[in-house]
Length: 162
Image (cartoon, rainbow, N blue to C red; front, side, top):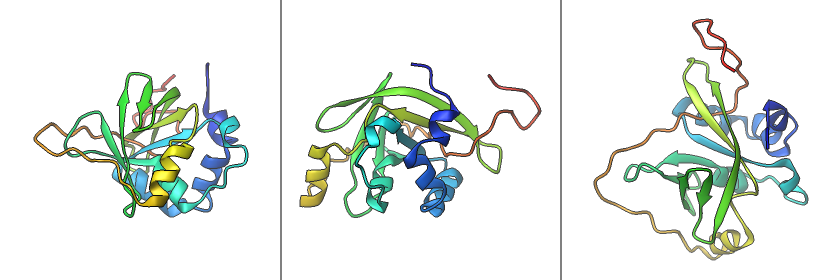
C-alpha cells in the first residue's frame, strides 16, 4: 500500500496533533521521538484524547534498541518494532508506511503509519485498570529514533529527497 503525506494531512489523529495537541507535537519533534499515526479508516468512532496521543508518541527505550515506551507517565506501555510490525503485549500491529521529515533544526525524524491504533481494546483495558507493561532493564545500546510530524520535502542542503 503506497501512502503519502496525503494520509497524514487528512488523518484525524495527525490533524488533532497539529492543532489540539501541538505542544506534544513540538516536544516530540524537539526530542526526536517516534510518532505512530493510525490509518485514518481505523479511527472511525475513536475520540482523540491526551491519553490516546500519549500512547502514540513513543520515546526510545534506554535499554533495548528496538523497544519504545509511551509518553504517558501514568500508564507507560512498552512496544517493540520489528521489521514492518509493532509488537504489543496483546498482539502485532502492521506498519503500513514510514515517512521521514525534518524538525526546525533540520534533524530527520520518523513517522509510522499503522494499520490500527496502538491501544487496542485489550491495551486500553489494561491501562484503565492500571496494569503496566513490563519495561526491561539492563545494558544495551540506546537506539534513538528521529521523529515528529512536520511536512518536509527537501534536505536542508538543498538535496531533494524522493
